[in-house]
Image 1 (cartoon, rainbow, N blue to C red):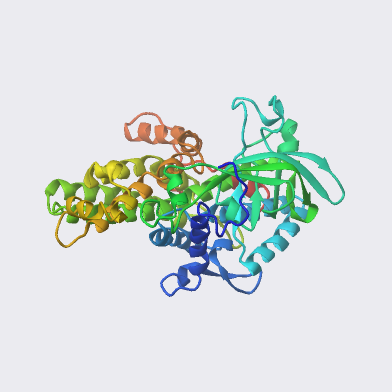
Image 2 (cartoon, helix red, strand yellow; image 1 turned 60 degrees about the vertical axis):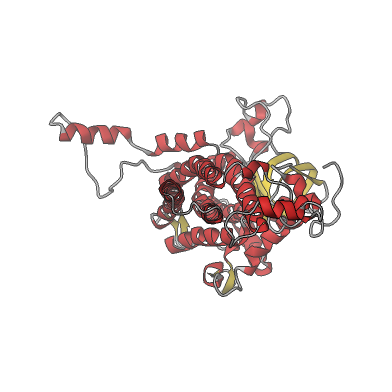
Length: 484
């Protein structure tokens, strides 16, 4: 809002983000979450917070989705730590691939960084999306050379970078950032092929926190209208000639690995959405059911039908995330990647279903979602008696009960995390459709159909059940002798 923030733990706009992060630390200790919230690290030979864990099995990947759903029940918001987690797992595979091809330094640096993060249980922001400038031009073709983050100087001690990363979730409340390239690149783009990690308060880093729907309510310091207890934020991160020490650099000019890196990261992040968005769906379903009860329509057939549809949409997103986990791909020893087809299907469902869930919740809650009096009206001694009388439905509930649930529906169902992020986070819908067409083997499906129709067919059946091609990342891993 144009003013410098001195302390994110006290600022009324950012404190809810800090509290949402807190839930990820609490998860490792609370009785109902610690089994999901902890994992064993072979790097430290100790238990660590799962949010800094390298996935070692399909069950690990499923635990991720389950943990995200469960934590959504405790925050009603994005807890902002997943992008950093997915970045770690992506770099784990990519640096292993680089080492297999003879470039061992990035792998050695990454392992030391990973140990540091795990030992100190750091909260990481993942910074991938660039400003991008003119979208049909490659990074090196941009009239604004800083439209993509780039290396401006290389020294024996490290590199200097300039540019920006946009829409970075939770970044102002993190301890470190893991920065990744946002797209596949060619040799002419090598200055833009950069991946590294730095503390968030590194000199030259500036964070501009973005606006959100209904965000001014958090500045009012109320307790109902803005749901000030847990929230998320996104920021534009500006790198103004920032120095990165060489021991924190994982990619510096190796453009040939950018396509694989982006493919691996995207699938990891798309898989996770099946957990957190299903969890927010649960919150909205519960609030909608409660509001129906407050006005005495909970047994109406059309209300039950709408709630059932919301359940179906929510569980479909979750099921896809679990499928992406349990049908995972083993990329190397103790190294598991999500199923790329299922992961992209998960995110494509998430791009569609939250808006349908939100529409049904608004239908059930009524127009009051957009027109309710403020909490300050309810607390005004001159108005409280009237509002308490006219806002009340069933006698078992108060006007405040109804207002609190209305605001929950409004803030969650129409918030950034459930609406906008569901569409554009982890890649916009077109990106998933591109992956569908790359991975699905139409020629094989046609030959199967020809065979069944009694036409001449060249179909060759294999033990594989699905008509899918191998992903670019799997091919590269296999060619390098990485994939078991």
